Image 1 (spheres, rainbow, N blue to C red):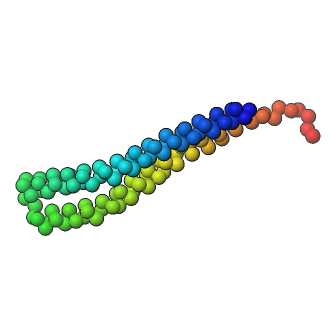
Image 2 (image 1 turned 60 degrees about the horizontal axis):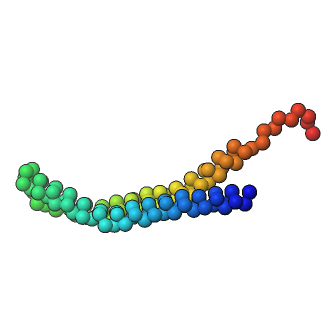
Image 3 (image 1 turned 90 degrees about the vertical axis):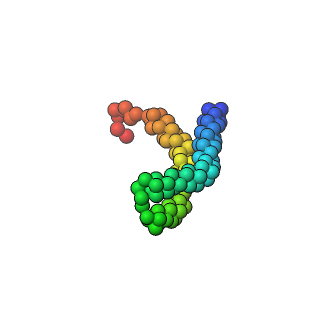
Length: 114
């Protein structure tokens, strides 16, 4: 019985470790990739809006200011999403334990009342 318990704990730790590593990878990707992507998209927008759409430079500048102001908010949202994802390992372990407990419930099939 103890061996089964230790095996289930080990499996739970492996699941938590997988989710933790996955969360760390996603967090580092957001930190490294997010700003260059936003800068690249902004430069493409700047070129298209000035060369092809003939927008005024004030409107383009306003857009760029708004994008720069929204960047920390988007990073915060993505960080919160990753925090939720990081707790999925623990939640899955608890759900599995609850399913095991529900499946091992003894049925009351007695006919004699006490």
